[in-house]
Amino acid sequence: MVSYKEKGLFIMLMLFISGCSRPPQLAAVPAQVARVEASTTPTAALPTAVPSHTSIPTANHTPTVTTTQTATAPPPTLTASATPTPTTEPPATVSPTVATPQATASAWPTIDPTWLVHPPTELDLSRAHLWFARPVDGNNNPSAPYRFGMTYNQRLSPHRGVDIANDPGTPVVAVGAGTVFYAGEDIETLFGPKPDFYGRVVVIQMADPWEGHTIYTLYGHLESVSVTAGQPVNAGDVVGAVGSSGVALGPHLHFEVRQDEPYSYESVRNPEFWYRPYAGRGVLAGRLVDVNGVFLPGTQVTLECSDGTPRTVETYWDQYTAPDDFLVENFVISDLPTGTCRVWAETPDGLVEQSVEILPGELSGVILQIRP
Ligand SMILES: [Zn+2]
Image (cartoon, helix red, strand yellow):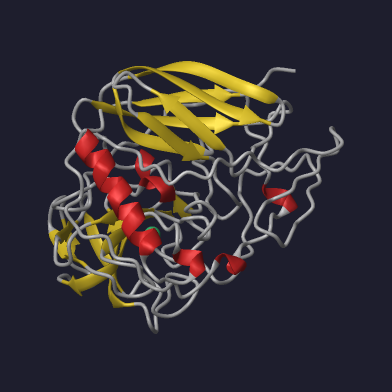
């Protein structure tokens, strides 16, 4: 449960921010750390995409998708909410920092018609990979309004990783055994859409491949780097310290998982199904699809779980945050309490809901679809 103290703190922070003489576009930025994402529109397509629809790319911030099966589909339902997802874990002790973004939502990518994934009917959980430790020797709660594929309430481009707020200087640790692939500034060697995007960054090639793929983990916006390329590391080894170098709005770790292509901004996967949940907690991967079984982008999914704490997550907004090869999911949320969760969403076809059991240390799955 969220204590009144925590709720009060959040409200006070919101009042503080909205009371400041900041530019209007910053007035409602939640008091958490985020990072401005791509200012370019990459071109890669999803490997698993099976286009069965025609969609009309739009230049505005709300994807409008027209299918050949139905006349029009309303834009995704988005309930703008700055409510963070509270957990029973200790809250971050950092002071929220809001800086002027270096890019705005005008960099919004348009919807590529080829990305509307039509996944297989079943959800294959047999190749789950909750392998890694957590990346910070400190707070490890990802920013709830800006999980992988989400947009910070349509203020930022879809997120390629997770943001974990901590005080500057907090140790950042390797999540598993591997070899340092890169350590230093991303000015001449690029890992993002432009130079000095991640600032000081460490990339580790993980020792164990997965289903024939090489897995990399990326640690961005570091204050300092304490490893060198070629150096072997093990889980828990310090690789640097939390900072706000590169394009960052405040001190936090931006953590990514990349598959096969370490330099590619398109090779990201959702980190929340790569690292282990907290002890006694579980992870849910899900798929929200329309009546024809095709991904519904940018739609809020609500969870009501055994601890009574409200949680929401949004489905991936665009084609640049690819799903897992086997899960073919479009949302993931970790650190859920064990027991039954009711999971529901409002879709253009109506309300859809399911119940799912969350098991400690395991990945559960759910498909949300109104059957035709
Ligand atoms: Zn980030």
